[in-house]
Each structure stands twice: as C-alpha cells, then as structure tokens.
Image (cartoon, rainbow over all chains, first blue to last red; front, side):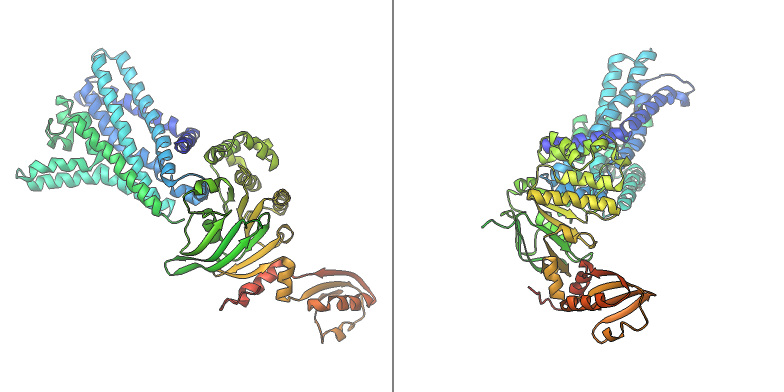
Amino acid sequence: MNAILNVARKEFRDGWRNRWVVAITAVFALFALGIAYFGAAASGMVGFTSLSTTIVSLSSLAVFLIPLIALLLGYDSIVGEDEQGTLLLLLSYPLTRPQLLLGKLFGQGGILAVATVIGFGAAAVVITLFSDQVAGVELWRAFAYFIFSAILLGWVFLTIAYLISVVATEKARAAGVALLVWFFFVLVFDLAMLGALVAAGSGAAADWLPWLLLLNPTDVFRLINLTGFESAKAYSGLTAIAGADLFSPRLLTVVLLAWVIVPLGAAIWFFRGRNQ
Amino acid sequence: MSTPAVRLQDVHKHYGSLRALDGLSLEVGAGEVLGLLGHNGAGKSTTIKLILGLIEATGGDVQVLGRSPCGQDNQKLRMMLGYLPESVRFYEQLSGREVLDYFARLKGVDRKQGGRLFEQVGLAHAADRRVKTYSKGMRQRLGLAQALLGQPKLLLLDEPTVGLDPLATREFYQRVDELRRQGTTVILCSHVLPGIEEHIDRAVILAEGRLRAAGSVAELRRQAELPLTIKVSGRWPDGVWDDLTSQYAVSETAPGHVTISGAMASKMELLRRVTAQQGVEDIEVMPPSLEALYAYFSTQFSNEGNVPT
C-alpha cells in the first residue's frame, strides 16, 4: 500500500509541475461558466437560465473533453517510462507491476478529480451567486452528481489509456491509438448506433438496442446526467432512445465503475506479460 | 568460504528463436569489480535483467547473494541491489532531491540518506534544481546516487559512461573505485573499453550469448598473445630499422616516427635494441588495450564456443 501511495504522490506532483492540474482546472471552469452563461443563447437569451439546459450542455461538453484529457494524461504512463528507461529501474525496485499501475491511477486520477471538482465547482459557485432563477439545493445536487460522474468518466478513460500504454511498444503509437479510441467512443459509436436504430425501425430490435448504449462509457455518462431531467429530453440526442426509467442511476453508476475496473484489470494482465 | 555474489550456471534465455543467452556460466565473487564486456546484443543486458529478476531464465540456475532473484522473497533481495540502467532519463520536472526521495521511499530507505548521497556523488549544490537543467554528467551522478540508496551489496552499472565527456567519465570511475575500496561488489557493463581497465578486477567477454573469455586483464592479454607495440621517435640515418623487419612489423608513420610491433615475449630484447640505436629521443610502449583483446576474443570463437580458461 505504501508503494502505491508513493507512486501516486509522485504522479500527482509531476502533474502539478507540468501544469496539468492548473490547465485542466482552468479549461473546465472556463467552459462550464461559458456554457452556463451562453447556454440559452439559442432561445434568444444570455445569462444563467434553467438548470437542465446547463447540465445538458455541460454533459455534451464533458463527453468530448474529459475522455480526451484523460487519454492524454495517461497514454504514455507506461510506454513513456519504458522509453526513458525508468520503467526498468522501477521494476528492479521492491515494487510489483500492479502496484505501479494502481499508484499511477491514484495519482493521475487524483489530478483529474481535483481539476473536475475545482473547475466545475467554481462554475456552480458563480451560478449560485449570480443567478436568481436556479434554486440552490437543486443546483448543488445536480452539480454534485455531475461532478461525481465526470470523475468516474475520467477514470474510465485513464484506465483505457493505461491499457493502451501497456500494450504499445512506442509512445507515438500509443498516442495514435489513444486518439482513435477517443474518436470511436465519442463519434463513431453513436453514429453506428444511429444507423442501427434507423435500420431496425420500430421492430423488436428497438427493445434491446438501448442496452447497447451501456457499451459506450460516454453514453453511460450522458444517461446518468440526463435521466434526472425530463425537460432535457429534447437536447439529449441519441440517449433519448433509452426511456427515462429504463436504467436506474444506480445501475448506470455500477456500469461506469465496471468501465473503470475492466480496462484496469486488462492493463494489469497485459503488463504482467510485457517483456522487459 | 564466502558465497559468490552472483552465480550463473548454464543459463539459457531464449526469446522465440533468438538465443539471447546460450549456456552462460559465470561467478562474481563478493567484493569483486567485474567488467562485463561485449557488443550490443552480446547478452549483457539480458544477464543484468536475469540478475535483477526482471526476467526468468529459460534454463539453468541463477543465484544472487545466495537467493533466486525470481523467488518468493525477491522483494527482500531487491533491497540489497543497486542498479543504474543504460541511458536513463529521470523525471525532468522534479528536482534531483525529489527524484531521489521517490526512489528512497520505494526502497524503504531513510530519506536522510539522500542528502549524504548527494554529497558523495558531488551533486549537493544542484540537489534542489530541476533535473531538466542537469548536464549529462550530473544526470548520471544522480543515477549513481539512486543506485547507491540503501548501501547495496551488489551494484549493477549498465553502460554508465556512455555520452559522458572524459572528465565526467574519470570522475565516475573514481567513485566506482571508492565503492570498490568499501567492498561493494560491482558489475560494470560496457562496450566502451578504453579507460575501464584499471577500475576492474576481472573482465568477462560475452559474444552471441556465450562467455568468450574471463580473467584479469593481464591474463587475457597473455591468452590472446596480442602483439606489443612501441612507438619510437627521434632522428636517425636511413635504413637503421631494416634488420628488424625479419622479426617485427615496422612501419614509418611520419619522418622520424616509427611504429614497431612484435610478440610480447620479446619485449625486453626489442627494447634493448631500440634504446641502443643512436638518435632515438623517445620511446612509448603500448601494451594491447582491452579493445584489441575484445576484438580478438569476440572474433576468435565466433563459430564454436571453446571457452578458454
């Protein structure tokens, strides 16, 4: 456990030095505030408007941004250390491979968590201060849920990044694969689903197609944040095919957790077999 | 009798059809400084990784400080090893002290030791600067400090002086000499040969995963029977060296400069004849370098491994 914490502390410090923490926090805060303020521009107004619109817009943004940032943060964590020679050194220490990976996850996951809490939390504070339309308790509950699921989403893509990093033999290749993975989950998957949906029409397939959404962590994240808002339906895009009560929030959270654990397990498995 | 620090017995390591090590047997005595020499791909790094327990041998037995490096209690064994990998680049955003702290904690070593080690490797003035600002020599000193954490019984240095300038190289080896005096067992991997002769007790030459030769540098020289070379300079009449050509290889490299090479055994006789010659101003005796030995041993047995003893 000590070894894991030691690696985590070093990773966090490294992220702090690289300005990762500050940069991600600033990006989150700026986008969250911008969206909260201009989110209603389509309906002809600016200013902080309805909570549902804000959360829906934030989710759409987070779905693009968080996976990308997490993949960027994690893609070189193993293959990068391998290229600079420190991986060999670390493995010659009294440190097991799972300990190294878990330490990385806690450290870099900590970076993501801190940035998400501060970045989006700051936006919530500003909205509370300047908006008279959005009620306090409701806002904070919605934001707490949003931030919690956003952190989980970040960890999902962090462990996916580790899996890529463990399998890759070169840093450049890992970066390429990470971008492809991002592209797949954020764009291609939903397009393919849409195609399948249209092809299926209103037949029996329409009953089980929504379950396929669980195969994409970004859709799970969207579902978590949208099912709470009846009025959000209109903006929620593809995820609207899942009825509001099809998936309980608890189930969705469990699925997202599974999306953290499965790639992590696979990464540990492949790391064990990685040649030194 | 004390157990050897490292004992490899008929060790094989295959990667698919590639035989990285092909029946290597090797012993390193406690307190010995061993030079592990060979080209890239000769099996040096594989040997180091086997000793560290990073990989398992396909066949044969590996014992390090009396234990198996891949065994159950290898975490304890690892506390007693120090390792400096080839051309390692430490975390550039962290300061030297932070890097050393990190590794000290991983090894379970008191972090106060870090301060002493910075003194010992001559890096105390830069300990709080970021590694990014370090020169190549300073980085290597940081690497050595890292390897020395916890006062290891066995130190493995993989190509420690690659990319260092001659001054930094000399300093590095002075530190190795210090450790040698303190009784640390050191395995020094290198393909850069000049300069390490005087810092090692024994050399082992690897090629194609096999042991080609082992012994002190003087013993290896005798085995190889490489020619002795002397360089003579001065002013002399034409043709004075002609009667040497039957016995020695004589070549005039420049007017007034002659290089003569011949068997080691005839060294004194040759020297007497050269010093007797009028007009000779300077004589430089050049024993075969480790480099020449190395070239000899790695080509001599390239087909079948008749390991000389």
